[in-house]
Image 1 (cartoon, rainbow, N blue to C red):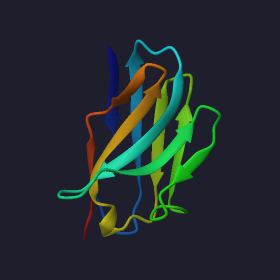
Image 2: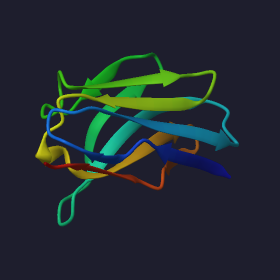
Image 3: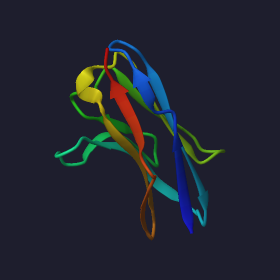
Image 4: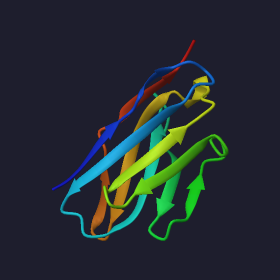
Length: 115
């Protein structure tokens, strides 16, 4: 069993900040990559940010310069720092880890950006 527990979502005003966390536990031998995805109602789930085993990162163009993905390997935890939030960032955010034998998803955490 591999379990991912997300936290940090909530309601924030435009221009505000949130930090999402995702802690992985269970039968984890080697993490090849970790990422954050988001999905709004009626829309496809999209990649927001990812960090590879070697440390390289990539971001969706819509969040580049505002969001930062990071990890703490000792805690098997990935973070998403979200700054300058916009209403269009409103979505359910999911973390994902890629292991050698498959990938696993967190339960999702709601992020709402509204006045």
